[in-house]
Image (cartoon, rainbow, N blue to C red; front, side):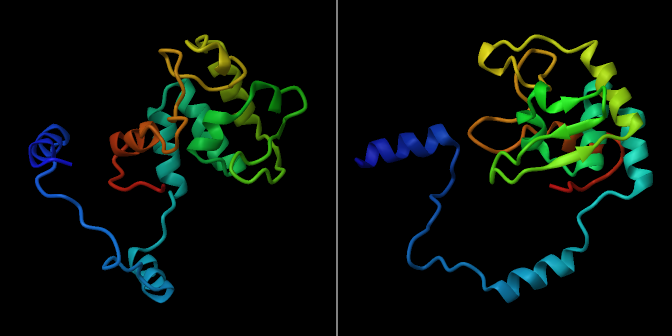
Length: 169
């Protein structure tokens, strides 16, 4: 890249300095990673924290939080959950993990079923018809995660508004 283009690229991307990777970058050992994880402590919400988030949540996030707790779903699982995988009549979700394809079958709690039914009364049609089979779409008809990976931060935002300064993700 020409020097002028490098300056322009740096300016447009907002980088003050270029990131340096390559042979000098070494991944930490497993022992170092485990020690850091231990020092950080558990990354989970306590029941009182979940109740507080549920109290602050709109119908969409309430259903998502309850499914997360009830079935162990993460943001990507929730965003990719098809409507046909949810059996509200018998109270089951039959849905393989999107990343691994591992089969999961989860019984739904009554409060989870109630929250999903409540959400379905307000569910918008997706803006992109390829996502019409998804259970969860935003109020603007989009997905709750970017398809190329990563989550949109809505659940972390709710945790922050509920007074929790950390993210379980």
